[in-house]
Amino acid sequence: MATKRPQTVDKILAREIELFAENEYKLYQRLQDIHTNYALKRKRGVWNKEKAIKGIVTMYVTPAITEYRRQFGLGPVNSATKNAIAKEVYQYLWVDMGLRNVKKAKPKKKK
Image (cartoon, rainbow, N blue to C red):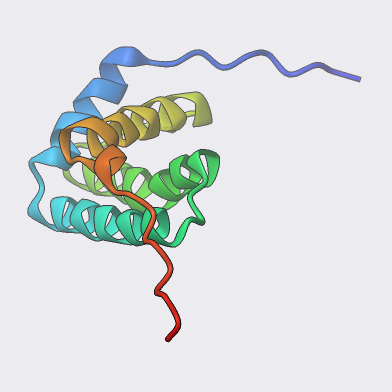
């Protein structure tokens, strides 16, 4: 049985796609929607970091790669590079956009 080789992260490509996505208006709007969704999840108390990163890959990184490929041409991008981009975007949401400051909502008191 053949073993899988560990995938390496293409850091230059990851940074290039990250910068491209930040400067595309449609993708930035998508990032704003993701931030709103994740803030609601934090308030409800159903936050999960691993699922958040997977969601960023699905809803933000993959469309960014598709758009980059359409405009400039690009070969295949491995999953390690996609996850590296998603982790950077997650850090951006967490620190710069203030997702870490969203507190869980207190339950309302019954009268």
